[in-house]
Amino acid sequence: MKNLVEELQWRGLVHDMMPGTEEQLLKESTATYIGFDPTSDSLHIGSLVPIVLLVHLKNFGHKPIALIGGATGMIGDPSGKSDERNLLDEITLNKNVAGIKTVLSRFLDFNATDANAPVLVNNYDWMKDFSFINFARDVGKRITVNYMMAKDSVKKRLGAEGEGMSFTEFTYQLIQGYDFYYLHKTHNCLLQMGGSDQWGNITTGTELVRRMNPNTDAKAFAMTCPLITKSDGSKFGKSEGGNVWLTADKTSVYKFYQFWLNTSDDDAEKYIKIFTFLDKNTIDTLVSEHKEMPHLRILQRKLAEEITILVHGQSELEKAIKASNILFGNSTSDDLKTLDETTFLEVFEGVPQAEILKTDIETGINIVSVLNEKTGFFKSNGEARRALSANSISVNKEKVTEEYSLSAKDLINNQFVLLQSGKKNYFVIRVH
Image (cartoon, rainbow, N blue to C red):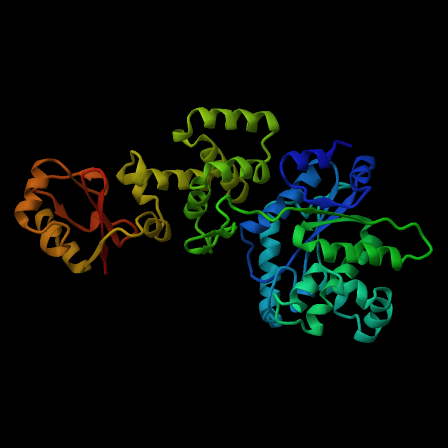
């Protein structure tokens, strides 16, 4: 077997692991699982790290298992949280589970039939018929309260940092631990991976595997990756508008691409190792080129391209690059007309706007009137005429003269017109 641990270490993806984990991964193909909480019907870019880990597992000849916490999602993981989570109702939970399945299926082929084909499971399937009495007797009996209280996720909540913990959340680590036991029994799963805040829950699982198999030499291993941070100390995965998601209905491909493109130099050097599958030589070369010519933002461009292709595909990347060039490069009226409404508004976010009646546009309006009285883009007709005479006015990226008349043919998405004065002064007309 190729050395997966060595690969993950140079990429900065190993925080901690149990003794024997590397040896196990070198010895044979190993079924490994990572859990995803269905707190939303999509996943944000923080979840891209465990997804990338599952893909690395597959690429190195191991069997990846993605677990959606349909049961644990009903309780909420206390790890890294200072207060109790709101409980989700079953309808919301089912919607979230279905959404996450769709996202994960873009990265892993759960219909494959080879020996190491990825597997998608939902812990609700084996927890739904497990009675409280049976769980308390068969699982709760194996782990002492002292052991559970020693976990950081519990200690923080019971100490000065937290507001206490309900019995519901206290049981979370037992249910997650039982997941590991169940997958060990049914899929011969020997390793669980997750973020560093999951170490306590994962090791409870390895302990349960051993204690619920008292007459065998049952093996179970744990590995965690660091929680991703930004170099300035702020939280990774958020933009000014909130979470950055892996689905276009929550974060447009344009905004997704821009998020990575605007990464700092330090973060880009770190993220290109974590989030892409480029090999070490390629990354080292990119880093060297970037340091020689940082103004070209070589690292950021490659990072944004690779991750956008991974998440949304090549054709969506090309659209995002086109949209980015509308503001910062040479683009045409045809390029503008390829933008959907959401992307158009995002590209020109913060640009002054005015509304014009559709009936006026259909009749036709002289450009001087548009620039002054209809929009206020210019303060007077004279100022508008001078700009037109200087050939500095464009409608939808095409230069116009004083004789030009704005009409329905100029509408983008049947509702927008883009005015431009010089290189950088934009104005959006919304037609209603």
